[in-house]
Amino acid sequence: MRRVGGDLELLKELAALFLESCPERLPDLRTAVERGDSKALEQVAHALKGAVGNFAATAAFEAALRLEEMGRAGDLTGAEAALARMEMEMERLTEALMALESERPA
Amino acid sequence: MRVLIAEDDPVFRRMLEATLSQWGYDPIVTTTGLQAWEVLCQEHPPRLAMLDWVMPGMDGVDICRRMRETPAMQLTYVILVTSRDATQDIVAGLEAGANDYITKPYDRAELQARLGVGVRVVDLQQSLADRVKELQEALAEVRQLQGILPICSYCKKVRSDQKYWERVEDYISAHSEVAFSHAICPECWETVVQPQIQEMGWERIPYEE
Image (cartoon, rainbow over all chains, first blue to last red; front, side):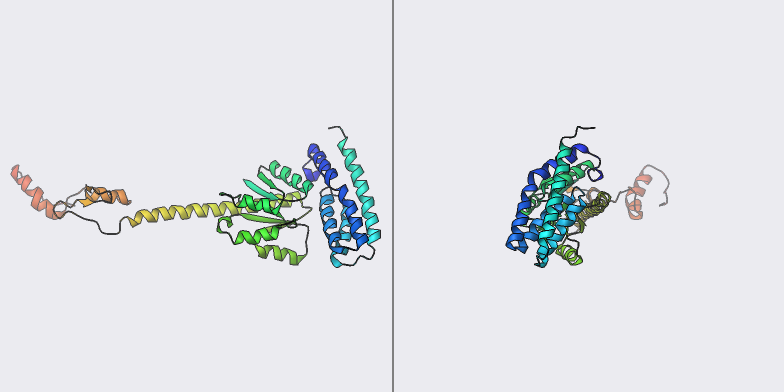
């Protein structure tokens, strides 16, 4: 909340924007890992990392960061585990943001 | 003050727009490097810009490089927004021509402070530019006192640039800070005034400064 200066309406707006654009990128991560495409992995992970970072979602941020670094290094060892983690964190974040949307203004 | 934003992530873009508006800036929002470049190419580009580093097509660093090659854009203060915090990336950004950088996710207070620095620099540049303009105008006026001035050999009137004859004191007052206080020199006192005094039957009056 602090990041939006305490503006709940703005936060809801941002949540809506996130929900419109980000969950559909998640499968791209899986595709990149399955194809061993480290460049694509780095790019998608980077974009998602930035997006979740807006909501101070630390766990999702770190999961994305790990995937991005793997992509950048070209070493996809352990990518499957990291990906599973990312997918779980994204789901948690998505649920939290959807709950926010239905909250009545204070 | 107008601030150009170039950011491809919709969430971050909206947050930046809202935050800048809250602080009293006037955000100009673009989503790609190319759009941002088009805004910069307009006649009076925004003096502040926050450019995302990583964008498809023209990225923040490309824009910086191009800006520094374009005279009309030199006065714009650029903050690169980056989630890359490796030192060599920061160095690359600053060398490409950015004035400052901020990493995302950013700290609100830090962003506000860095924008404040940008505003100070922009204001300083503006007052310098204004001062230069003033001095240039003053210099142009001073130059008017140089050159050849036709002067009448009899009455000493001069012909000004507007092609009419005027008294010397009028010409000089118009073109400088000099003000005239009318007096009489010793020679004219003797040759012009003294005879008039004697004509009226008075005694000679000695010259006084």
